[in-house]
Length: 80
Image (cartoon, rainbow, N blue to C red; front, side, top):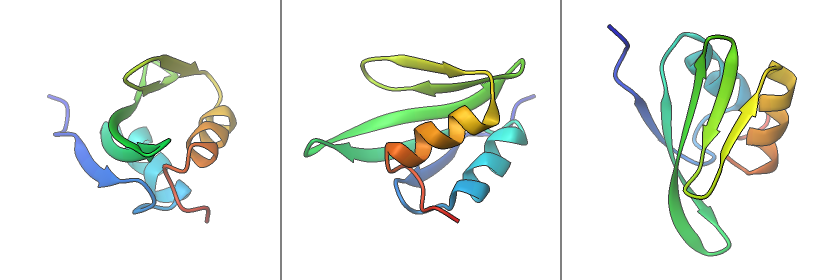
């Protein structure tokens, strides 16, 4: 049975903390502000693929470095 999703606000977690949570099998539901509007993003890992599910797009990354670049560029985490 999967763990309950973790809820966070953009910038609350460091990149390492967020990646550790995702890689442990727990999804993260992130509240973020983009272009002055608040929205919810779900970040998760499934079958070796990292997912960044936004209201308008589903980003897929097969490499952890790609996921790190994505979450840092979007401001979801505080860099380590």
